[in-house]
Length: 337
Image (cartoon, rainbow, N blue to C red; front, side):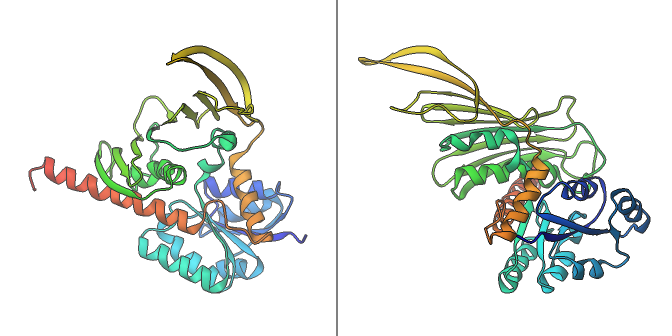
């Protein structure tokens, strides 16, 4: 099968990683890079032994697919240009600055028969991949994503910078529409929201409580799922999951289990029910490389991307609803309403 010719637009911290990892992808042929900072792009191109393009459209013309790793405010214009040239698109999250821009890209991709994948990388985290054998049907979700302060990213609220990762994961697992949202947040050291909490109720009855901060002393990326006969804990920092569960009749061991034992039995009526524990993980997984390989696979085999444009749009919609509720809460606190 012929390799997919790829170009990377934007060679900041993350763009450099995209470019270097494409050289390790067996089905991708990295043609070159482009950045508005020509010197930065030239240095990376020399380092990797690839082409540096002085004009963005020249790069787009030379490839089958482009990775757009630029500020969110530029996503729409670059992606629209590439789609009009019938090129497949990888867009870092969030998909676009506005929902209208996302809708337009979805329509244009369908019209041009092109793929769009959105960079919600936590879908490829080993903690998430390890749950491939697990039936996920949560009734309550608790998520914490806490980071220390980094000036990069403070031009947008922490909801769009960090919380959106968890919102995408929750939408993916719950598979129901949000019904009601209550949220609060505050800007502590930047002009945008630095700490936020949202309680999201879904139409199927599931409730998610999501907390995000980018000014924490201690880093944390954890999510806990509560469902019938199981409690699942996911650690995205260390890349593993744990499950405490009551096995169903004839249930086979989990393929990704690295540690398993019985926690004992409890009595339910005349029955004795065994409670089991499994530590689940996937070793030797590079989430970003796995993400890029899945994008190439979607193009080669005409598959729906793992994180589609519709998924990215849904995450953006939910993030904007959270931001709206935070604004209402702030106005209430200030006595405006």
